Image 1 (cartoon, rainbow, N blue to C red):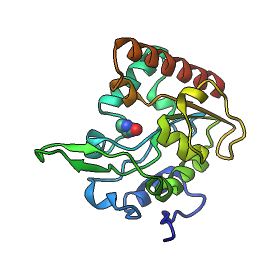
Image 2 (cartoon, rainbow, N blue to C red; image 1 turned 180 degrees about the horizontal axis):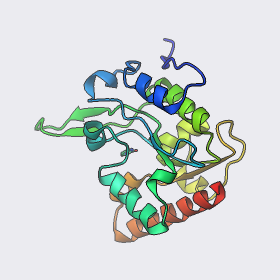
Image 3 (tube, rainbow, N blue to C red; image 1 turned 135 degrees about the horizontal axis):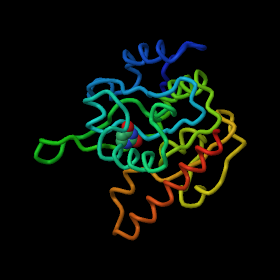
Amino acid sequence: APQVRAEVPAKLGLRDLKSLASNCTTCPWAKSSTQTVFGEGDSQARLMVVGEQPGSEEDLAGHAFIGPAGKVLADILNDLGIKREEIYITNAVKHFKWTPSDDGKARIHKKPSGGDMHACKPWLEAEIAAIRPKVIIALGVTAATSILGRLVKIGEERERNITNNALAENVIVSWHPSSILRAFNQEDRDQKIAELRSDLLRAFKLSA
Ligand code: URA
């Protein structure tokens, strides 16, 4: 079957994109989620941070990276003296995909499929076209795969500056903050935090 893809008019500004995206029903998760969670930040940001998809808290609040993973990211940005308002933060997929927990009380995050990424990619492309960031930092495999169009191993590529991508002059990949929350032990956690911190700093400096 042909893969579905959101239809997004060319050359729209962020405000119009956000408003159109709020009515998007391309993927099946539009129905089971609360709302579209669009990106936010400086409309002329030189650094764009791309995550996977909104989590449960983001779905309810309508803002990206405000839950537990968002706290990890916010602490690192804070530490580096980077303000959320001077960059742009978004996700590869803009609806929360979930399955009920066994007791039916919680919404368990489900990883977006290739089809979900494909369906939502026009929104991400339109955000990038509107902002034209000099550097994109993709956090985690979903964001990296969506941006680069191939399967990415973060551990193997995070120190690279990828310069052959059509979407931005520079693409950097790093750990997703959620993978830090799921780390095996404190040592693993500390190392990933240090690496994400160093990758974000490198991305920010490169964007200046
Ligand atoms: N994880 C993401 O990838 N994005 C969010 O907005 C929240 C959690």
